[in-house]
Image 1 (cartoon, rainbow, N blue to C red):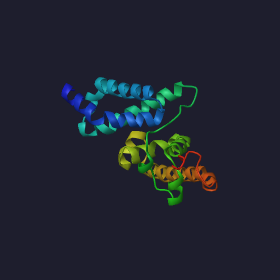
Image 2: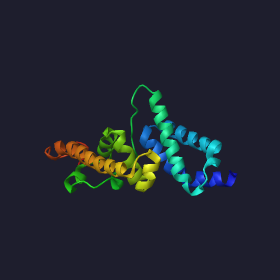
Image 3: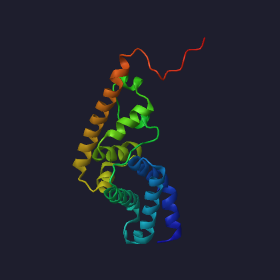
Image 4: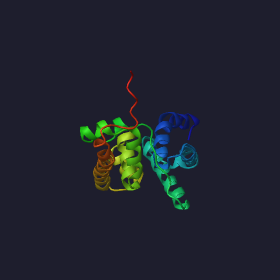
Length: 180
């Protein structure tokens, strides 16, 4: 593997890999470690990949497997957070969207089972195709489609449950005071 190819892969995929790792771990340092481990693995084994056009899927798959390996070794379940994602998540009813804020969306996404969260992040935030997600998560395409559908429904329900109590309160405590 050439140094030039390695540099191109880092430039092209680092940000996306980091966002995916962060969505899985909820920790900047853990996300950085996962991405670094992924590129170290590429440096050691990347030459085994016969079709360089599949490098993106290979990198994401390697990162996801490294995450699963780490999680198996950890006794507690890690927290999962994403940066601002309101505009990139599946649609919800307009009244729900008006009431939901970034924190609400993050909390709802974090509560989803990893089986649903990972495909949602890969599809909506990383813009992977069904086929790429299937390769990354080592699942059949039908399972990916099912998990995306069920994950969107679960996220929608979680958001509606969070916002419903706010709708009847007549206002939000976090609203700034009106200027006099």
